[in-house]
Image (cartoon, rainbow, N blue to C red; front, top):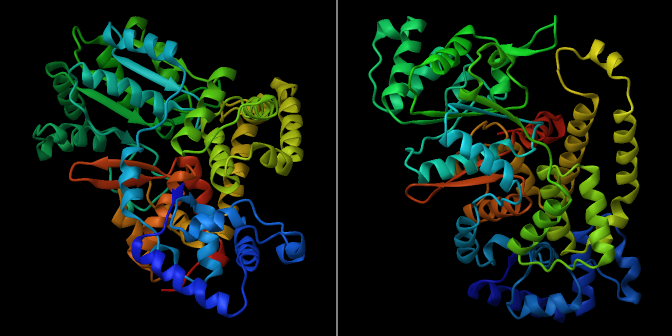
Length: 500
């Protein structure tokens, strides 16, 4: 992200810089001091005489900063810290916040063929579409694209029901996260002002019939996210089936209905085996999605760099490095976004430097994945029958968690306010109001609104949070469940606990 000084901030910076010059500071002193903040693990003062500085803290960048021109956020923050000035008090925030609300739609590349195929099915006889794949692979993004087109075709938009409750206490859950069918059925009926009597609420079968009748009588689009939380593994065959039998009965009645104008889109890490017992396969479809292909991976990097207004130079070396990284993570969109965010925001788009910093780790990861691919599937199945996932899938998830933790660690050393906002925001399992996120951190520490706005912008530009804008221009924030899982572990670590 790029930022510049506000008019009043520009005057404050000029005044402070004049004071520092009177104390004997030169441009080289300020660049060295800023480099210490930008990359604290490097002894920059030892390089003072050779004029070596951190990537975003060069004298040329300093000149643009002092003239009030836009520079990368990493350098902006470092120069402010070196001058002992709170960045949020001198940054031009209005344009940044306006730009944020313009860029919240998820970047979508590739998968045109699968999107077209699934839309054709949903516009045809298919009543229930199940999208499966490992965490972060893009299931929700694909469901979003399907819902977007279906709503354009006349389906009334509805907020997804996300079953990823993340083990939160009931009093902290802002949406119905109970895994039983009854609570969700009541929520879906209430959305269309369909009255539910006390007797019906206590009779699950009546409630089930009432919801099916409503979906038969009206054209609705129901989106159920993270349905893997409704499933349980069966020891006899390793399959995953609904824990609450009412869910199975509900979907079976939909398949058996004579006519059904509504559509249901489901995302799940695990494949619900119950559907195979229904028959009438033209009424339901399960689509397993994998990572982006080689061309789509490069397209994703291009779009992310373009959105951040950072040049992506795709020469032979850079393309080869991005290709290798994409192959290691098998085109996993979440992993590629996090990597792109680090290259863009910390290294100003310097792919070669990122590669040099991480090449040993990438090669280690490649060896681990190669070994997982050669593992004895029979031995693994005996010990992991309930997970119904391959050793390779579990390994990729572990590698993703390590990538996320590395990103969070760098964030902590670079911008602690953003780090704290991320980990304290991990208590929210769903899209929640921006002010609720801010309040959650302000319960423990005193922060001005402007500082938290900058922290939020940092998280967004590093692809650590997703943002929605609701009617009334209210910004809602959410973390991907895998990012939130890692962030929550940081919150529980004693060193990060704060006293009120």
